Length: 77
Image (cartoon, rainbow, N blue to C red; front, top):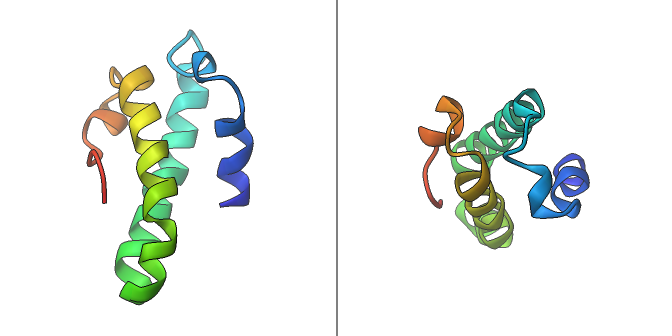
């Protein structure tokens, strides 16, 4: 979560620009986090991360939806 706080603390305009490699790497980390939270953690811990992950997904879908990895990700968990 700490690693993802850094790119998402930047203005939303930093996503979806010509830095598609940056967007793709951030999306990969978000995808790994989703897998970790949904498959490996108990349901009680999932509640703590839902809102933050959903906000990450919303930003990615709004700004970087043209990337296949982001397009195929869920809108929320």
